[in-house]
Image (tube, rainbow, N blue to C red):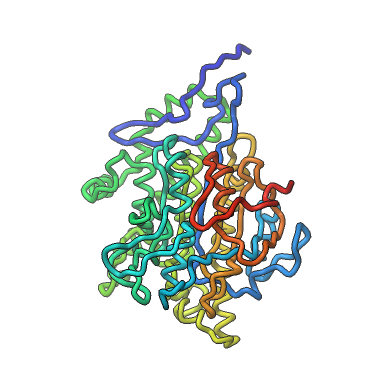
Length: 450
């Protein structure tokens, strides 16, 4: 066999009839005998869990590597080696500090910024630069999208939502600048087109034209796929086939959701519901997480932020038999029935997180899986929703960050340790070393297991 340093460009696209499709990392993209060939790429993720958690059902009793998963976290047990449960962290800047009520707005605004937001419902909103956007400034130079922001609720940022605070503080956790919030896209069709469209796919006219054609963008690139396959070895052909099938599957599910919501029975005149959003919450989450995984897999972005719901969201979850609003239930005043319902919602959110982690773990990436090479922060800016506290924040850290983070532990830090300290660890692991973010005081110890 003759070994050369020729390889496919990492940013290879399949093109045809105006469509462009990015590819996952294939062996053929790694130059043979090159220094550092195949070095894992670290991706960062931030998944927001609204309104705190029932601490007694969340926090493991034991610390260290031998801990038993709590009832809320039990679904993560098969992924033990990839997950750390972190307790003791706080967001002091989410407290009132003289501003009165508005803890849910502050929990959202502070979660990734560590900065106390300005209390205003109109002009003059101000928080801080969020950790995801700090990473995006550097990592975004290497990808098609600097970052991707996703959610499950309408991304309106106008008006007031919580005791004199703008909705911008509750409806996003991502801030490009202290005065520029990043809207969360909740329509999977729009996310799909942003990732796999031709650069003009978010335009309404472009979307309408694509739907009218009713053909997969993959079909436009069929010729390019056939030509590319002749240049690939058997292993890469299998990888490409599996990847394209997953793309087609997601597109099929989005189209199915549009068809289901287009009929008279699906019409909800009292609210605006984009046709591509599944009515079932868990199906919506799974579809978004599938896109989440594929965005990493195709290296379209290395920074993704996802809100399971808005800060202080009062949506109900009939998918698990709960018709009461989540926010209202968190004011449970220790009513056992309400506490149980909140813990069920907490467990559902974690179950969605586990779905994402399992997908990442099953997706090959270099010499491991995507889960081996990501670092994903999961958590909330509120500890106890009933008390509106901002200490003992429910926090999970998943992924190995290409060998930089050791999993399988419950790590307890001293009370009032800033959550912002963890942000410094994540930025450092992604190759974006930062000395200060929000109210940080220095990196956390013990994450590497040293």
